Image (cartoon, rainbow, N blue to C red; front, side, top):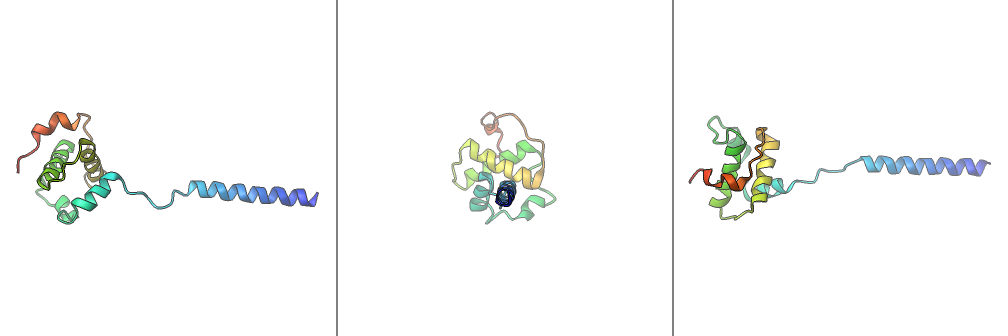
Length: 114
């Protein structure tokens, strides 16, 4: 019976180890919005631009309009989903505005002109 007991103990240890490994999420994977922002925007837009007293983004729609504006000014030609991802990344990491449910394409004509 000793070998059965040792086998069960070993199986239990393996199971516990596998459960612990499954619960460890590891390093966070950057979102698409974060990757786009860090690749195309962060060279000019340090965090100071987002925290300045007279910032242009004052709610979700104006934040999204600014992302749309600056990606166009930079010639990036992002799809609507990419603009939304960068807006979501900035909102989640800095602004914390209430997200709007209106699709971007409905509001594109409201984007501020350069």
